[in-house]
Image 1: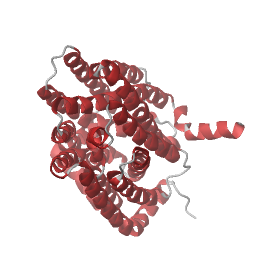
Image 2: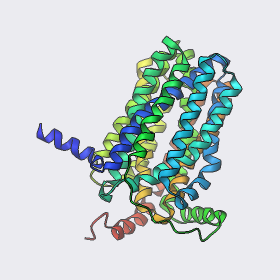
Image 3: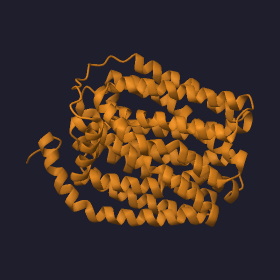
Image 4: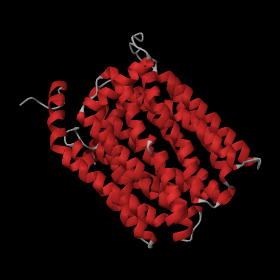
Length: 423
């Protein structure tokens, strides 16, 4: 029993930091509402239009601002207080959810409302994501807990991903999508209160010495010239463009392949969340960042294999198992990549590199969503997902080829920062 308690303390060691503990609690509640809204939104669109193409188009509108605006948001995260940026973004997200709930509950919702509100939320998220990722280091007093905090961020994200879709599936069947949107709006209060309760040391921010465009250019040049960052971002971009959009087509699989309703959709999405949750806990249990780059490559291979098998499955239990594996693989790949980037990046460029991380992982998703929706309209959802799986496998092969040179570059950085001993 004592050994079990010690293991739990080790896995959740970042919660020793008061500010991070507040953030973890508030964000955990808010993210459940976010996932409820995401499931309700996809089901609402498919119910109103019965169109896979429009599913992909709405995904494009909600995610394209991440690709276009996140690099500028990264400069803002390096220039201005990240805490304030996050607080403003969370408040605006709450208002977006409240407007959406009002339109649905009063039966005034139209497709163009969904497109417009999805675009608004995408713009807000473009500024929230790099600030939130960069803010993690400010909440951690003991920097040895940073990698654990990043893994716990993924844990709470995927715990919400496990709970939110299941709850949304039941609520949609009982009371409709509007209640999901309303509960999401209320859930934002938890994270807003937690942010206001934090006691933070003032982060020294130098007055801008360069124009925004020059700082943006410097961030891109830094990422390109440091090979580990460049390769990690390329592979994440490929996974996002080719692999993650299969989730956009999940309502099609739930309805057309498995002949179910929102409950089946919720089950499928929850399996992805369950797999990702276990993946995040696995990373949280690791004592060191050493070996994470090899794990990134292995998970990219596993992810491509899982969605390829899923595309060909007509057995619900097998499909759920493959969704579980894909959720585990993509989350370990994403969180491990985030950890490697955060441990090798220079502090004055952290916001910009985290913005490029968001641009690669989330910013490429809108193009993948649009492509997946258009291909599914022409050749069907199963063939579309199969093609994406094959291309993900090709990207993982490229990653494995680059591993030896990447590890040679990372080792001196880890030695210089004291992450590994100089034997």
